[in-house]
Length: 573
DNA sequence: TGGGGTCCT
DNA sequence: AGGACCC
Image 1: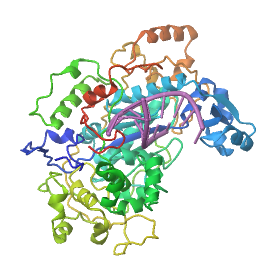
Image 2 (image 1 turned 135 degrees about the vertical axis):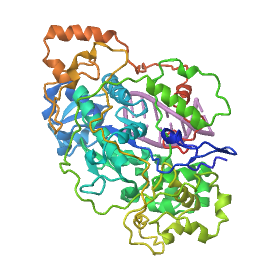
Image 3 (image 1 turned 60 degrees about the horizontal axis):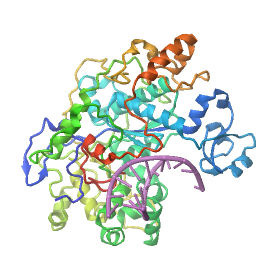
Image 4 (image 1 turned 90 degrees about the horizontal axis):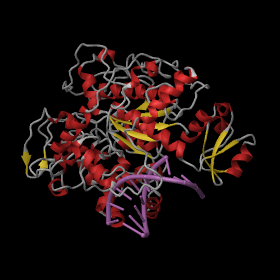
């Protein structure tokens, strides 16, 4: 039943209500098609260094390295200009930059606190936030995007920040969701900056893997959106398999032993041989990662659960997984009243209002009749004559190249156009169409541009221009927040943190640290006292937190991620 | 090569 | 608990 194909997903639950619910055997049916998730990845710039610069603004102008033992674990951008880099030995760093200021960073307390504030802030917009280390967060904003699309005219949309491999991009029906995602990401980055004084990057894509990868394309304090058809370009731009998140040192070594070096090598390697080395599940997983497929859900780690909702009676087996997910999502959403924000999206480098786009390829859309993944299992497809397979190819996919792909990837491609990860392998402008595999060619597969197709106007854009549901509610518990400190536009478009920031670890996320620092001292003190008494939504795990009650249970209940699950990180469902 | 984290077996 | 992955 569960080949690990992109099945039983929860990402399109937002659309599920519109869909017919039928049950065929045990497979969940998805009818609609275009539902792709919108995933955000936030990555704070040199996080430890930023925290130290907030604690001591005098450091801002100096080259700063954060030291743990004999390592510079991170450093600010001033230091980077002098040749210092992350994970460099202190000796080397000082050699490169004798004026380097060193701050010990072995005690993580401050970093941890700040880190959770960021996560909390993000959670106040949308509960689906997953932490990755102290300085990264994933967010699934699919529902938020859907809601905005409903009451925003398409002409009011634009891409905030960069669009991967494009200088500018006009918004149309096909890319509107990504555009909204980029606007949301910009607002959130602005919120992180104006309330916490931290800058960072964001990536917007249709899955976690790609959001993470694309977020790093423009580095400090910028954001980048990936359009699905640019997936292959992104993947092939990675130099070395180690750059694929989810492939670590051990796996890399094994892959090397098999003679694989590039992303493309892995994409094309015969699955059976891969299975011998890694087992079926892992083999498929890593091969899919190499192709840019990742159906792993955004799994909130913290305890957003405040109320009763988790202790529900054992799930009725008549419920599909998706049903359960849907419920949980609604309940967690409903406890999030939000205030309207005055924050305006940052415009960044992208000053251009969208003009004319290079006639954009569109995301292929399949007919509804092609039922999702219902057993796209090998058996059923591998027997299919090639002609049949080919005839099902999404527009723009080069059949020649298609045939080079491992079978499960082919299946993925075919079925994915109804799934969330659709259009993944929709490789950009092609030219290598009819080639034979050239072992020396380490570039990636190329597909033709998808031909224009009738668009799915499943998304209707109404009038109602200014609709911003993003609120700045910090924690539902707080009420003293009527003071609109946080709503002050503390910055202009260029995101330079005020050097005067008074670091106050107790000020709530929606209070601008700068504005706070301008208040009379006694007022500050009074506010702080009040805030300190208030509970955080996300409790910071104590150092010796035993967490007797398993985080796992919390997770699987909280998000209802299919309790089984393979790899947490980018695991297939 | 730190000082953490997560999940799977 | 050990091993893989992540930062």
